[in-house]
Length: 137
Image (tube, one colour):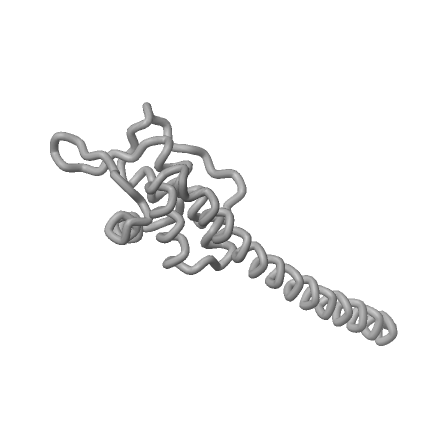
């Protein structure tokens, strides 16, 4: 399952999810989840008395946001910077706004590029449908 799957259902739990449940829900591997934690993209994952990671609903919400940022192509370094700003507190709102404004411009350009590409595809489809209908007896 990928992050783009439309109808994801949160694992049934009581705000405590195993790494396998979170991996299934997000489409991320357990290795990636551990890496996110190691690089500071995912912070303070609680542990059971046996040392197993226990994710919370807040962690799932955070991973949903990270998934959206990944879909936009935001570099991991920028996502980590954002996570650091969030952890630093409300005094970082201006820096967070700037980070998102800059990335919004990148996303807008991606959308414009995709719209241009879609127009080319639509033109080619129309052209070939017209050509095919003229060739059909």
